Length: 138
Length: 382
Ligand SMILES: [Zn+2]
Picture 1: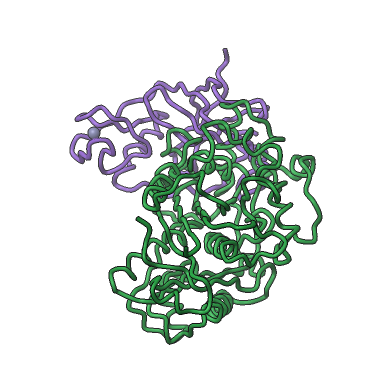
Picture 2: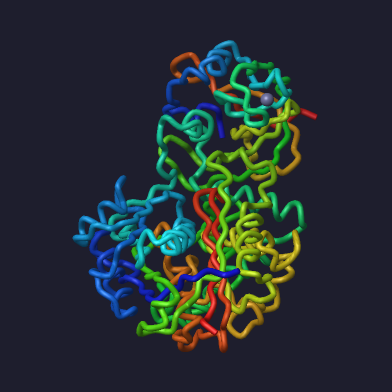
C-alpha cells in the first residue's frame, strides 16, 4: 500500500474541542490530550477528562512518535476511496493512549501484534495530515 | 428473585429474500406473535422497536393504529431487543402498561441497503479519528478482536471456525434457515472462503438477509390464562462500553461480563443452570468472547471448550439452535430472533432441533462493535 493509495476519503472539519489536535498536524506534530488535574491521557480529545471529570484542566502533550501494534487487520475488501489490501491497526502509544491508524507497508500480511512502529504522515488536501505509522527500522 | 413477567407470544416474519417493506415485515411479525399469544392489537399498550426510522416506535404505533402508554426505541444495534425485555418487565411491573410487543423488521437484502463501511455520522469523533483509516464497520473491529484473541491464547483459525461449522449443523435442522439446504460447512470451507478483514472470511461473518420477529410480554398472572405456556423472564442485565474502536483497552474482554453477572444474579442462577443458549453470532469471534465473558468457560478456554462437538446438535451445550446469524438469518439487528428461538425451545416447539427438556434459556445480544451487551434469562413456568 502506498500512502497515495488512500487519500480520497473526506475528513470532517474539526470541532472546538479537536481543533488544536488537527492544527498541530499541519506542523506534523501528534498531540495527546492530558488532564493536568489527574494525569490521565485520552484519545480522541474530549471536552472533559473521562478519569476525573474535570473540564478545566485539559492540556496537550506531544507524542514521541513511537507506537506498538495492539491489534491489526488487513482489509481485503474494497471500500470507496481505499485500495486493499491495507492494514488497519490499534496502535498503543507510550503516552498511554490507543489510536486507530494505518500501518503503511509493502508487506501488510507481515504486520503483527507487538510490532514496533514509527509515526508518519498522510497529507490531506486542506493542509492537515493524518497520523499513520510505518514499521520501525530495527 | 426472578420477575413477574412472561413472554406469551413469539414469531418470525418472512425471512431471507422477501421483497417486502420494513413496515410490512413488522406488521407480519407482530400479527403472527399476537396470534400465537391469542391476543389482538387492541390488547397492546406498550411497544418497543428499532431500525424503522428516527421515530421507530412512534412510526410503528402509527402504522398499526395504536396509541401506546409506553414505548422504547433505544438504539443499541443487535442487543436492543434484550434491553427492551428488561424495560418492558419494568414497565409492566410498574403498571405503566400491561401488554408489550417487541418487534423488528429489515429488508436489507432485498433493498441492498448494507454498506461495508457502515453508517458514519460526520459529527462523531469516529468520523474524524477512525473512518479516515478505512476500517470496515463493524467487521474490522471484530477482526482485530479475533487477531488479538488468537495471538494471546495461541488459538488457530481452524478452531475458531468451529462456531460457523456448528451453526450450519443446526441450520440443517431448521427449515426456516437461510442455509437449510446448503449442506454441511467444513473447517476448510470456512478458511477457504474469501477473506474480508484478516483473519475473518465471509464464512466467519453473519448473513445479510431480510427478516424480523416479535415477542409479546404480559404479567405472569395474565400469562397463565393465555393460549401458550408462559415463558418467564427470570433475569436481565446489560452493559454499554464503546462506540470508538480504541475505547476498550483489552479487545478480548467484553461488557458481557457485567451484563451476564447482573442477569444471573437477578435470576438466582449460574451458567451451569442454562439448558440452551442463544448467543449473538455476528461473527465467529463474537461467540468465543461472549461465552467466556458470560462465565461458561474461563478466559482463553473457549476454543478448547467448544471443540469436540459440544455446541453442535446432540452436544452438551446446545448453542444458537436456529442456525444463528451465521446460517439462519441476520437481518441487521438480529437480537429479536434470539428471543424467538429461546421461547420456542422452552415451549418444546423446535422439531428436529429441539433440545430435550430445556427449562432455562439464555439469550444474549451484542450490538455495534462489541458496543452493547444485554443478557436475558428465560425459563419455563414451574
Ligand atoms: Zn482528570
